[in-house]
Image (tube, rainbow, N blue to C red):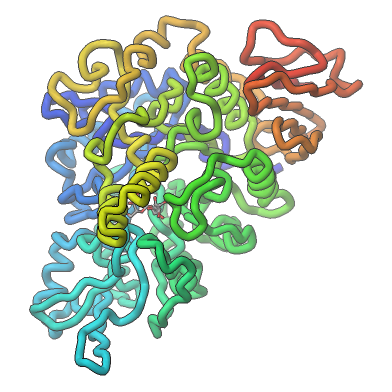
Length: 567
Ligand code: TEU
């Protein structure tokens, strides 16, 4: 019986502040909109909120470029609003997680302004500065061939001090130097203790695997020379020193508070490495987001060279990560969406009018019976879908998308086919799908704002919105509420149970969860056709706990039909 900590049996609702609810009529979501929606979030059944970054920022990467960890971006509100939100959560028995973004800051952060001011500045080594390399013709080149996640070189030349600085993301997101003790202490004080002392209950930790870079900064092997999106992560992901940094973060800060942490593992597919972050005995973090399952079909080097999801791969990966904490003292998360991912009903279900609702409910059943702490992303509870296919690159606001499209344009001389396939990739797995305004009602701007929102609203808000679904007991929203209540009643077998597939079909997912003598059987059909699924002898006399269709047949599952049995 795992030692139960409050965060193991709870459910987290992730909010993308810019798109959640605009309470002051400037077209941007804000903290006031979150505060006035606390009862909505509580009644969904989620008692923890993860708020994506709300700190002061030029918003190049939607707040993942922090210019002041102790100030709030003005369009979102103020520090007082965060304090009001913390109080609003606590009086409801809810908790609040903030986003800890400390691999890099914004280039507008005072730390970076000092660091770039001169080579002698005391904060010079708070960031990663390197001299240029010159070729035999005396041409200047970056220190190595590393690329940014957001296309282009990972190095930006600084004319004033005649050196390059490293940025694994946008050039306005300079990487912090985690070898610098004074910098680490400032992170602990300014971005962590400042908020924990105000009552924040923990953090989602951004890009937790890449703080420590290989100190020799060697060139990386080129895997796809045509790709503007090519990482050198072999030289900076999960380095031995990184585990020491996270252990120190725990020892100096996290261990002193009753807080929860969830780290973003990114494309870390080695379960032993993941366990080194989340094993209780290692005293680092409580759990992480593993991405192998949700990245199914993403391009291996260039994520936008994506394929539709192969069910066999999706199934295999899901089992691997459901089982990776069996028999050890780790913990894990259950999620299918976040602010960087396409909408799950479009990616893993079927967002056609005929199957959108039933497949959104199917995915809810998959998550609600999954091992780990459950995370649900704003709009997922409605079955919100990807951006319509007829939107153009001008409707995509994410700088990852814009940089990628422009990099392809530059690399191919505006070749029509290359740009069409770039748009194809963005339409499949772009981050903008998760960032369209939350759909509250069928009134203008989907009830998100009284003015034109910062980002275009998905055209289907009249069919998919909170108001209609609150009133409909058969809606995706109502189904999620019912499921989360059932998960709470069966939390042992669903969230802590062992995971075993009982079928080997690449089209359906049928598994048993076992915990302290309880057994659950979950049957999920991931296709638009009926699939034969002989109910095994020992289950024929058990009535389903819940299903997502009105009528079903014993020996087969209808299109996108799911069923959960418990005994
Ligand atoms: O994401 C880190 C990360 O690896 C993703 O950006 C990923 O590389 C990208 O989505 C392609 O799949 C975190 C945040 O979640 C993301 O929103 C930020 O843009 C990024 O870090 C930089 O802070």
